[in-house]
Length: 251
Image 1 (cartoon, helix red, strand yellow):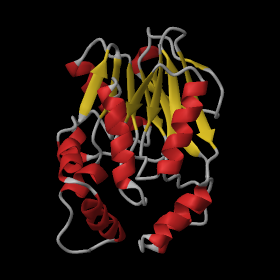
Image 2 (cartoon, helix red, strand yellow; image 1 turned 90 degrees about the horizontal axis):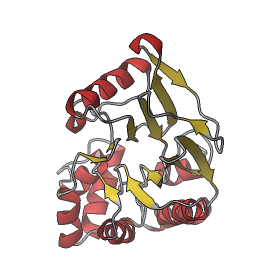
Image 3 (tube, one colour; image 1 turned 45 degrees about the vertical axis):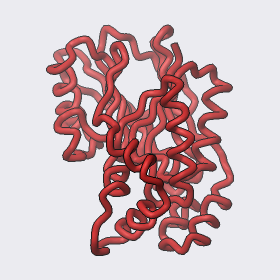
């Protein structure tokens, strides 16, 4: 089975549709959404509707910190992200907010665990950027579900891969987009899928990962999409300029 893992969409409908289309062309048979469906972008209601429909068809979905903020927005704006949360809350229906609020923090499918941040206290939204954080996340997953061999997350807006090597030590591996990486299940693996809807590395391509469980292969992708249209929609909605510039790769 090929599972497409899509994280940090951030209300970017253009990027979501591009990833879904590309993953389908790659033979994806199931989708998993790793949190932060909303926030920053101009199409929160449309993104939630799209993913709700896929969830009813069998997709896996977990909540992210921006999904929580959209349901329970701050009462005062203390940082730039607060404005996006308040605006997003107003765009969503009661049904959509209720659905977001009931999403689990993590979900397991066979030997795959998906979580937005870290499997170690997922509600605290720890960033998994280095070997030590990856070790804590993988250890927490293994302690609760010994059968888990793959832990997939988002939150960091980066594509990273870690694996447990000889002597139980964790090793980091920098993936190259499109390359098929062997990920045999006799080892344990943790990876972050990158951000579909808001890359922060100066590049505009949407990110996602594809896990082929039958072949024990993992591929990371960068998918081109109409980032200019997505940025224009943010400006038209009156949200901070920084949100649009991120999609253009200029900040």
